[in-house]
Image (cartoon, rainbow, N blue to C red; front, side, top):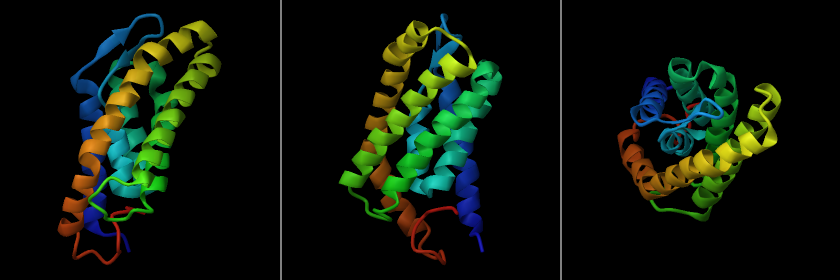
Length: 180
């Protein structure tokens, strides 16, 4: 049975991801994409909710924001950011409720970042039919900065939040915060 607190946390993280994506936007005219701060919440969703929760909250929250700002990117975002959250969740779930940064946290953030970067590069080239140079330009100037900022924020606050949530969810029937 799914714990109602975990479902509520999934909904909250999905909404926070959408809000974080929309709060600060810098357009990238050549692709119609934009720089945002949502990657921090995508990665935090994976770290706190596990792989499925990371995919749903990270990909879903980011795609919701795209539907408002750059709808053409929503399908690519759902997959790219969903995979980012999924990989972070998959690797950091080994840590469970540790409140300290571990090698699994670092590896999860790095591999999640690579998934997001490759997802957008390939999505822009094959789905949006943008030239390689244009897609690579966005990867270098916008997407790489997004995942670096998101990674730093996640590593700085994620394990601490994981420790706090461990105490909050102490009455849960499962031993970690993984949603599904």
